[in-house]
Length: 366
Image (cartoon, rainbow, N blue to C red; front, side):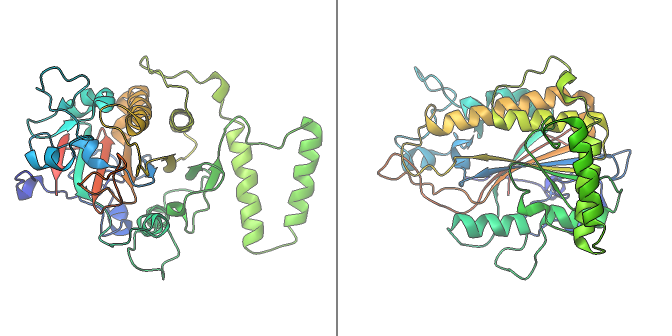
């Protein structure tokens, strides 16, 4: 089922900052290596965007092995029709004669054909847990099977990079920062740039901030550092004119929380506030029942993913040279479909890597 791959084509550099040796030391051992094209700059200025598909995404229906008969035998109801299937609509979008994209992922095809999107099949944590919580924790720590490391793999990367003191080096979109960001660099949990401030009357909010500053100044440890970081983040975000932000290159973000997070990430990159890593979640991938094939539950999630990523890629334009997007899930699904019209927890899945610094696009089978 896998395709032949020469050693020179093997994955050599993990999906973090292109050409950054410090990032290589910080990345987890399970993450595949991918060769990036020569880069003119070091780590400073590059941005890593980690997208986590929570729930265990079925990668076989995302990156479809339409050249493999066993795939169709194992999934009589869920398999995506071959690109040349007569009368089938929608059907897989061919990539290389063996693999194809799910039709809902078709917005990503031009990016892949342009060499800035790669799919790495049969990749993920080597640990055999089928628990969502354990698997997500292992993936985000980058230490499968080990609980002794309290930091996340991105947090360790940022510590190794040591590239600046911006309070917005690490941003986690949501109500709390993702575990992958844990480390010496304090991440900012962000839902909305516009709403990241003290509400109410401006004068009253200013006095409240001053009171909080005096209160936290009584502490000389981590509490003071956290308070100062929060105040600095508020001040810096106030300088980002997000309400006036206009996506570039005709990019049109759909109306979804996922796309909103990507749009805000683009705005932070353009504002040059020192962003180096952003984490974004897209949930709902635990498709035990009524998963659907070319259409249905998972197809709708894939449409959100593809439309958001395509808009972000268009918006960034030439700046994608300094941006690396990694899309992952805690594990994949089993090859065999179940009796409920879905798939159960499996093992390896697929990673998507999107960057202007990739050596080539397409599908890589590990």
